[in-house]
Length: 431
Ligand code: HEM
Image (cartoon, rainbow, N blue to C red; front, side, top):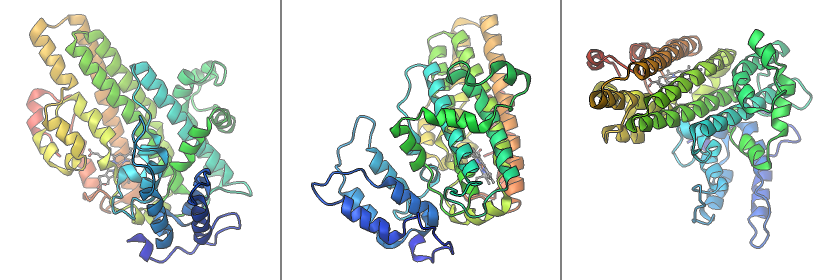
């Protein structure tokens, strides 16, 4: 268990609370009849200065007691924020550590939107917050008061490059979600990626409510102390936010097909393809992570892998039912709830579309629109997988995956899979 191992050799700066200070504050906070704000920033300040993998047993035990004493009744949106926060802090201590807890997805979660355009707006807002916060963190590394984690700080050139690449992923969302004039639509259309990152980030973060600001700080809980892990976490979260939208839009597309509204389904599948395409620059951003930093901190992320991403597998399995071989492989045994939904006969875009054609005969225009949208999604997903594969080769080479696969050979094998396979290809899909 993490806490029995020795702590990394990091000298905490004066402003960073030591474990004993945090314990003292927690004890003071827990005094009955003395309501006060939970000391989130002190807990996080300490956690980020040593890494979640290295929190002391005394502190972990106390945090666990705090969680045990929280009221058990849940609010409308499930467990309280503090309980979810403590679940993330205590994942290794509880022996529950995995990809969703590493990426603190439960802290970023928002209630499902009623309408797909609202869901897109929600995705855009969260994505902009995550990447604006990343730009701020990167730029602070060049100041006299860098934020933690701060070992292996980046060069000014690397910070500038990351800001440019983050902006590439932000601009399409910024054009949709920010008030007119914050970004220059004509300039972006002419040359994407030139919006100045610092001012854009400041403008976005200025609008954060106290709850959103807390959500942003609380959702970075690195396992170690290296600067680049912040980039890794924010990139994964930005993708997850995108997968959540894709899944909800595809579920709506299935309902539209079921209700004999194929034109609307085509629009939705097209929107999903577009958003996945817009997210591809996130890979370029993550490619700036230094492989030597990644190799060090991934020692402490063993057991957390995006193969456990329920969002990714949900959107994939809403396109068409995965082959039995893939369902039996770690691709789906790593996401048991998604697997169960599929095994229980989850309806898919491809299945509902074929049923619609069988029942009503194809409407040539609708069929062509849906086919074109599905082809766009297929091709951008193939690009996504190829880029992911190349990134993995660069970052881990021949090492095995943290999700217990062989690593790169697993990713090479899944390149052949298709979201919308031709019927005769289906049996040939690999796990
Ligand atoms: C340093 C960058 C990355 C490396 C080295 C990497 C490596 C890997 C490896 C080796 C696997 C196989 C499963 C395992 O054993 O862990 C995997 C699966 C996966 N990764 Fe990544 N990955 C990286 C970044 C990302 C990012 C940013 C995402 C976006 C969320 C992502 C999403 C996925 C998904 C969805 C799978 C499952 C694919 C499937 O089952 O078909 N990865 N990754």
